[in-house]
Image 1 (cartoon, rainbow, N blue to C red):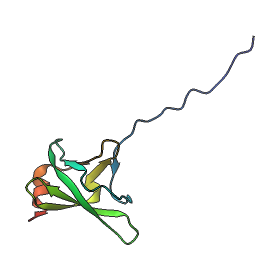
Image 2: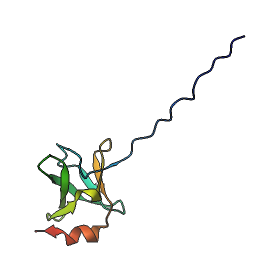
Image 3: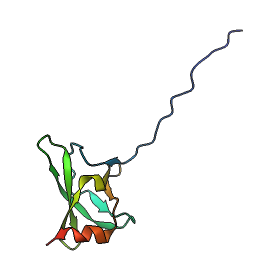
Length: 99
């Protein structure tokens, strides 16, 4: 009898959110944004990019209408869920908000 040898199947990693800094992203306006506690705090208004098109800042329209400008490394893009999760609590976001 012949024995069949094969390598074990490659482990497939589940999708993980990606840090937004340096990503080249488009068409994300309106994605809901959540703070570090998982609370919905607003929606993505737009992103600021450098001259090469890489994301540097994200602008979040808070539920009260103000716009917060945050460094892109603070945001995790979860494209399958169509949402952005921030690594900071709401009070930090509010400190960067303007009317």
